[in-house]
Image (cartoon, rainbow, N blue to C red; front, side):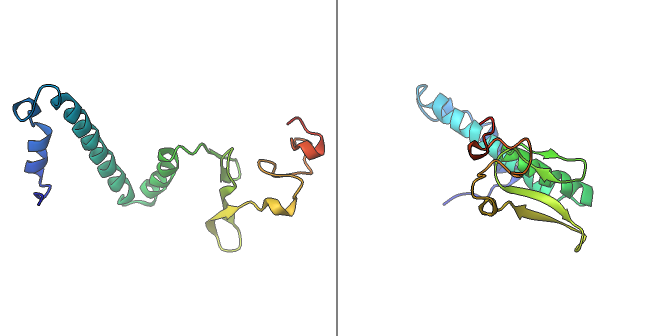
Length: 134
């Protein structure tokens, strides 16, 4: 059975002297794992605070940070298109609905031009089938 994680209980855990409870060989290992766990708790609390942010701007920042936290490299193009160098998902503005939408590239449209080629008609195409630089 575990005790609820009250602020007092958390402070007790953070200040726990493990050397009083176990051998000097085991305490540093357990202490390292405990520090990592408490660090993860802090990171998750910060993430929850971002997601619960009140203003639309704060929520937009939380969304961009979600991409960064997932180690997804991305850029925002001048027209607002948000995409990355890898993968087939990107975010673009849908004029008809006046909403941002998640879209996926369909590489099957040009079967001779696999990822990462998006525009086989482009002079920048690097697909081996087109004689590009790849």
